Each structure stands twice: as C-alpha cells, then as structure tokens.
Length: 94
Image (cartoon, rainbow, N blue to C red):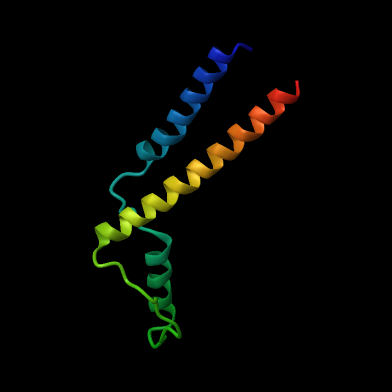
C-alpha cells in the first residue's frame, strides 16, 4: 500500500475517532477524572478529610488548563522526537 493511501486512511480513521463520540454524546458535561473522583468520594464518604494538600494551587482554572496543555504538548513532542529518532536510526542502518 502506498504511503499516500496509508496516510489518507490514517487521517480518516483519526477523524472518525474524534468525531464519533461527539455524535453520540449529547447534553453531557465533560469533566476531568479528578473532579469525578472528588464527587464519588463526597457521595460515598461525606466526612472524608484529605490527608494531603497540593503544595501550589494555580491562580485560576485558565492557568491550570494552560499548564495541563503545555504538559501534554511537551509529552507529545518527546514521543514524536523519540519515534523520529528511532526511524532515522533504522534508516541509517539500511
């Protein structure tokens, strides 16, 4: 299979994976795992007291989202660099 066909198939597959959940989930609020876990703990044990707190709290939710996005971008860059480096190394051997 040619690279161009493979790339088109992969792009279509990624688009289907990204769009399909949005078509089936209507009117739901998206939230993070931390918030959901906090809600379950509050429901199961209302007297629960956390035994540890964060050293630093971001000043706003926007800053928290920004830091989370930067963390994801750095991780994606690292993974992309690693796979590119390994492919270049493999190509250099051949």
